[in-house]
Image 1: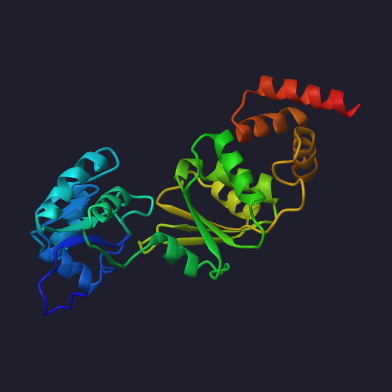
Image 2: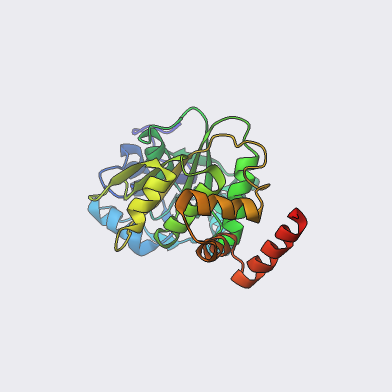
Length: 292
């Protein structure tokens, strides 16, 4: 293990960087970034802001989702020759929904030492301040962007739960209201959620409450900005309440709970499932025919 009195050993260093506040950088991370032969960055322009702040002049090279496989082969060859390479993402811990995993796996496969340099993480920062269960949690990254696939992913997560953990995920601002609607459809309007936005930054915000309360707060805003971590108190579902819910059951739920007319409820469900309204109407007719 390296100490401040020893030169940096050859190998790959996965260095966590601040997720917003540039003061959230460890002394060890700064030493590694200064001592490395080069720094592989998700975006060299973004990393340059941090390096300039701490007067670090180590050469940088890009390594992002579009070139990581090719770049890894190049960097592994340098590592084989004794290089010391630091890896950083734009923010947080590399490899967690960010580039870094491919390079780390390639280095390990070639017998190259890989050193984690811990620090900031949006997942853990949001979790410990959420007030939800921190002893059991699952990080699921980003959900699928398309409505139908997203709803299916949530239903599969709900169906696989045997005890009440906390689910932690990332979501884009332009999809967050729809995602909260899907969560309500799967776990019900009383499901507790915590939304952490702009962590460690000037406009840091936590919204805590039921999924409906948080969704309504966001829906009332003219715009939603910033990076979002969403946490779900994902209690186990009763039999048939997730994947087994029929279109008729979901329709009745919306009509009763929110007073939505059938036409508008069908529009909502069509968005949730990522299908056309006409396709949903045909399914509804089939369900009604079977129920007679």
